[in-house]
Amino acid sequence: MARPKDLDPSSNPRALLGCELRHAREQAGLSQEALGAPIFVSGSFIGQLEAGTRRMHLEYAKHFDAVFGTDGFFERNCEAVAKSRYPDHFAEAAEAEAVATAIRQYATTLIPGLLQPEAYADAVFRAYHPTAPDEKISSLVAARLERATLLDDPTTPLLWVILDEAVIRRVVGGGKVMAEALCHMAALARKHRVIVQVLPFSAGEHASMTGSLKLMEFEDAPPLSFVEGPDMGKLLDDPATVNRHTLTFNLLQAAALSPKESLALIESVAQDYGHGEQHP
Image (cartoon, rainbow, N blue to C red; front, side, top):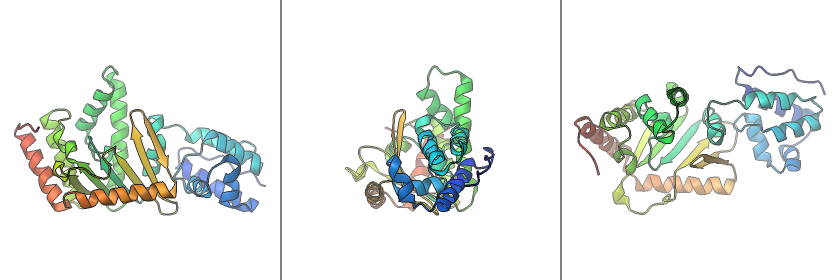
């Protein structure tokens, strides 16, 4: 097999690496399932690597080089694309998010990162890292704001967010910061760039009381679910699990206020924060 040239890691390297993997697999006459079986991953996972929605880990890259005789090509480029501005537990999810066509998220305590303005993000990271130098906090905030540039595209990805009412009631950074954050989110909703619903306290028990949830869909790869906790996160591609999480999100949609009612509530609470009122 002709050896592919090394990729330029500055030019969407993960997608390019996926294309090279697909080319090598097809040239070798292997199915996605056959390529994945020796390393105990599914054919759909190989498809996600080829589509650039999943990160290629080093052990997989070494296997591909051995199968295709590519003289360390996948290993070298795998190491090049492994560098990330994001924490290890979130890096792969952030990379998948960047190529998603639709993102659906349920947030329990915080405004989702894609919707956070600078002051809110700064308060969140300072709470996470109370002794960190200002330079580290600034770097984390910059990475979060860079993620939000996904929304500069007027239509893609579709972003549908359900906020537990606790998200708008918990004061992060003070009343002024909260007013700004809620107004920012409301402005995006009014521009029809994001759909926001609030799950009110009055809804009582609901389908996702154990934590937050994020679902991502892609043009040419199966959907993914992402769950996270303190300093940990996991992308899930098992179809049964993703289907279950999709049902959970649908149930939350049904229990939440309508987008119109939610927007009215968010703007009312933002106005109260702006006037210095506190919320229980």
